[in-house]
Image (cartoon, rainbow, N blue to C red):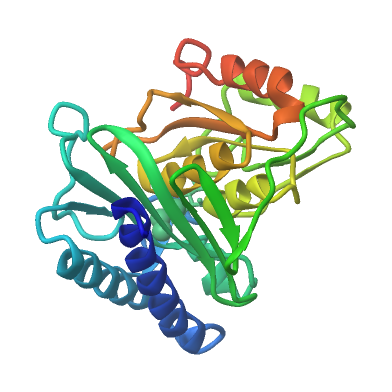
Length: 275
Ligand code: IPD
Ligand code: CA
Ligand code: CA
Ligand code: CA
């Protein structure tokens, strides 16, 4: 029998695929990008149309739910304190700057929290037609169960991180962390889509993903995916607010020790000096 969480995630996955079709149809075509803040932080009419499509589908399936989307202020606000019932965190395009520049790494990300707890989520990469879903503690890639990753002895990790983020002076803690990761890791890469990076950790393509400037909608689906395959995460604060960015790191089980050390380095105290 399909659980109620699985049913909601099926609805979200269909919405993500439908939005993904719309996004894919506009990829490398003419789109108008407007600046939101830093030069890489832009929004297009495609982000807005995709978010509207997703919001309508989620509310049609569960009208009592709260939908918090990146591009539309409706429903935004501090989640904690009124986090009862289903709350969706929607990023219609995570990696908009990649999308605008014709780089084929971006995704739709939809996370579900119920009564304050991570319940499930989906990440859809429309260019590569990859759908990552998590519900009831199990993760799937295009419908095939993703096995839990083994713990055991760690090889040097492949790290995906957008730290330090462009557009502001880096905190000393961030440059120190990047230097440490560059010497400890097999490689450190900047994917430009934090939600896709988390999905890659969940399926074992990368070992650790970290970002010091993310909102709840960037990580809500990824945390469900990563934990469903045995990994873990640290979030500062937890959950991330919708009104301000925070830091998030997730790891595959073999890299828990490193992940926790990265999480400590990105803790609020260390980043206080960050602008
Ligand atoms: C961005 C991406 C990027 C991260 C930025 C986010 P957006 O999301 O996740 O990886 O470094 O901080 O804002 O704006 O493309 O949805
Ligand atoms: Ca954005
Ligand atoms: Ca995002
Ligand atoms: Ca976005």
